[in-house]
Image (cartoon, rainbow, N blue to C red; front, side, top):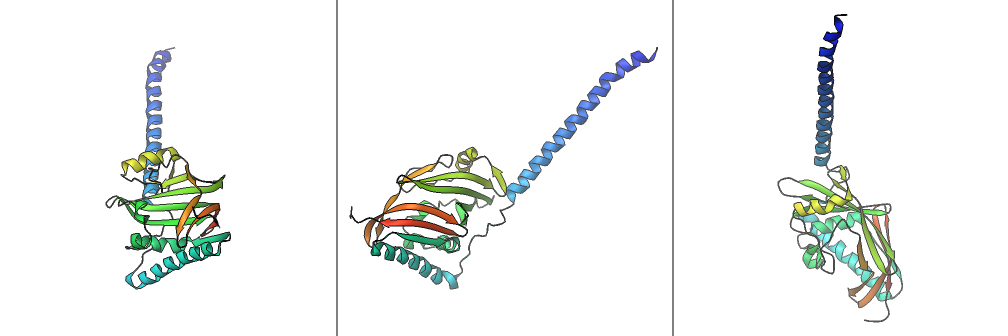
Length: 236
């Protein structure tokens, strides 16, 4: 009979203890999740291995870039549709060259000063571009893109992006790049918005021979970019 008042007094204390335990467990879970996310964000993807071109290999890399350009010129000169294939292991040393702007005019518009150690990685159906941001923080950002050609337009869409090994929602890419001070531009000069699909006209003009071409298909195979090119017969 005398236990009821005691139970009535201790019940609120037990309830408060349970709430404190629950809050402690939730807080510890949130802290552990934040720590795991930070570790993942600071851990580069396993495939991130940007090229380093030493002085002895620089000339070989230049020659390979020029030979690849000549292959495209030969296909244009022949005047028939052709497949232009380039490997990611070729492109990555090209991006390292200090005189890449002289050999590859306009490339530095797509590689702002805030970006270090750029590289690309081609897998089945997609291309991934990665770089290091910030001389002090050294965050590794990577962007996975899918490309298709539809009715004379090249459509490129960001499907995934990561900070280190931490995947993040595509919608946050614009904010992250703005805060990092990274500004990228499209070939026509428009600013690149990573949260929106990029649509470009699937035509261009080659320098030698001076002839226009149309891109009919873009395909990513493991380690390779394959572009189907059609030289145009009218010299517009």
